[in-house]
Amino acid sequence: MEQQSGTDVLIIVAMLIYIAVILGVGFFYAKRSNSSTEEFYLGGRKLGPWVAAMSAEASDMSGWLLMGLPGVAYFTGASEAAWTAIGLAAGTYLNWLLIAKRLRKYSEVANNAITLPDFFSNRFHDNKRILMSVAALFILVFFAIYVGSCFVTTGKLLNTLFGWPYFTMMLAGALIVFLYTLVGGFLAESVSDFIQGTVMILALIVVLAGSIIQVGGVDNVADFIASVPGFGSLTQSAVPLTSEVLQADGTVLKIQDVTNGLPLWDAPGDYGFIVILSTLAWGLGYFGMPQVLLRFMAIRKSTEIKRARRIATIWCVISLAAAVCIGLIGRALFPDLLLTAGSAESIFIELSKFLLPAFFAGIMLSAIFAATMSSADSYMLIASSAIAQNLFKGLFKRDASDKQVMWASRITMCLILIFGIIVAADESSSIFRVVSYAWAGFGATFGPLVILSLYWRRINLPGALAGMVCGGVTVFVWHELIKPFGGIWGIYELLPAFIVGLVAIIIVSLLTSPPPNDVTEEFDHYMELDV
Image (cartoon, rainbow, N blue to C red; front, side):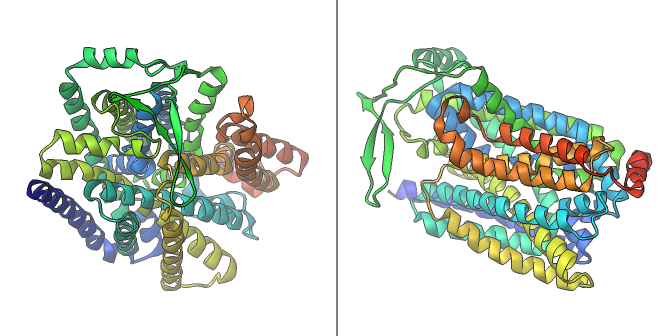
């Protein structure tokens, strides 16, 4: 007991040092960030390639990378986790290649837009601010869900580590993220995300290497994977044999059966072409992710984007591959430790505690907190800017001063904090599934519009609005009403919703009047801007 207590103290000390460093970054940039709304929301468009690339990926991946993705690999094998990782890696590269430079230039041409809703309204000269308002509402809804998933990650991390009450730990983590975001703004968030991205990739590499050594080498890993039907296949998925257990709160929990210390498996399930295509569709989400697109808008020079693209892609490939492998190897090391889909998301935590001395384990586990902070602060900042900058100032009080907009932003952050805590109160939530829902929402709502806004001259305001609404609504309809039918209808909602949004933009734009001459004039020359 004394040894365990000492271990906990060392882990806590390491994590507190890390949190102090991150909060220090926020306070260091506080004065500069609060000098204007452009500084607070976009860092004055001064991000270098390393900070832009690493902060884009760190803010995007969240605790999902270290908990959700390894958890899926641990519980059902390689197929879903690997195809998701492949889709995300491809999406990362294509987003930087096709969108980054154009959005950096066009956002400045479009009346120096500093948020994504700003860009949409300014791009189409939407004087009534309809696009801005609709985009802001979608951002608020999906990011509120995202923030809740980040708070779940924090609660699970500290609860698993120390056995302290989940809700208390979730609340403490939420307040730390809130304080840091409130003080520092976008520049502090981006700089600390660079630090956190570095911590995340180092943690993944260290835990992966230690796990391979502990299990006895790659050959032993391969032998274990081959022993479980469908576990290592990309065209089949492993199916745990489960029993249903009624919980005290009336919910039913599916727990994998175990005999003589070995988990039991059913016949493997097919992972066919349609399902693979559906999983690869995760990559489409990048084209609509506000937290990533903002980094494109904020990078210092468009000529630095090529370098940033290489950094981001390499980081993404290494991190995703390591996360999937950690889940697979973790099952070989601890075959009967985590027997529910929700608990499987703690495999990175268990491996870190098992493999490393306490203080270093604390540093590695700070990577989870790093991922959570880097995402939650982005989500809170972007959602608050959508309401303060795009609704409060853009629609209701157009003469609002910077100070008034900042106060509106902070009030919105408080409301998002409360909503996120409510969402995160259910500790049985799967991080992977919650994130997938919000990811689909952003990808389908904004992805088709971002692409066509930058590449298609004929797109107009009615088409843009139709695509945004149709894509976003289809995510809800498909997930709640169509997906439960299963079969081909069970595909990931992002794919059909993205297609619906894309088609809606094209059809409505072609059936309505062409965009005004001043809009097409900007489009014809925006790439000539020397930034």
